[in-house]
Image (cartoon, rainbow, N blue to C red):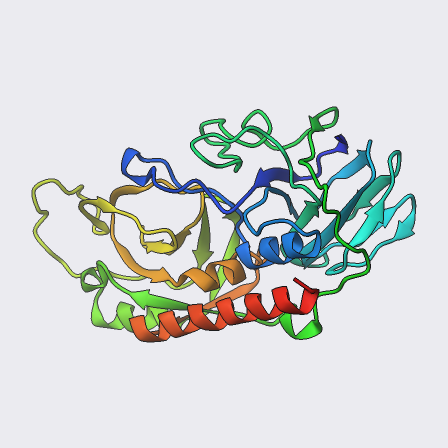
Length: 321
């Protein structure tokens, strides 16, 4: 078991998401930085879709009631085990009665705590991910609080400790400002000048940035004048309702990038989509940090996805699986 002493700012149980329910308005949820989530699971011998704790800006303080192996990945977040510093991107052992304490993240936003055997909450619709907007999944459908107790899954084949992720597979969250986007579906609603500004401007992450979406601050964009079509609202950014891809850039004058817990459709124009492998990068950008959109083709997006898959495979092999 894990006894939560302090839940931190916002810590939730997440796996890789709840798929196959989009048509009923259920977003996938799941780890915001799936790359770091998978590395954490590799280090402790779990399948990559095992549930971890996603800790945002400040993590948990937790007491372990059983011997196990754990790992921390993602945003740099100093941590101690019984007051002794512990490494990130390296598996380490914990004995029953020890306490892990985490501090504020110094670079990046989200840190993942994986435990050998995984966090064993009951699945909902095939996933253990927490979706707080409707209160399902994870632990009682909400962020963790002091006094919560979490089961740990079976780890009969306990992994070795001291295993590290090679540096070449560890991301630098402090320097990567650019995320790649596929421009569309409704970019035709922007004026030519605003379409260019979308991918040339510096955007900054506002405090309104969470698992639902990242609202960005920057120049105000203009829409082509038009006669309001039947079924659309009267705001210049409105269109007839459509489905929103995860990562889509919704445009109520300024961008909101819709993420893992976002609504699945609506009537705002979506002028582009952050490619899947760069959503992990965006999820680690901190409030007031800059973000730039780089337009790419579908083939370039697919190639980027292959590169990340190759990196994950390389990390998995390096760890000794």
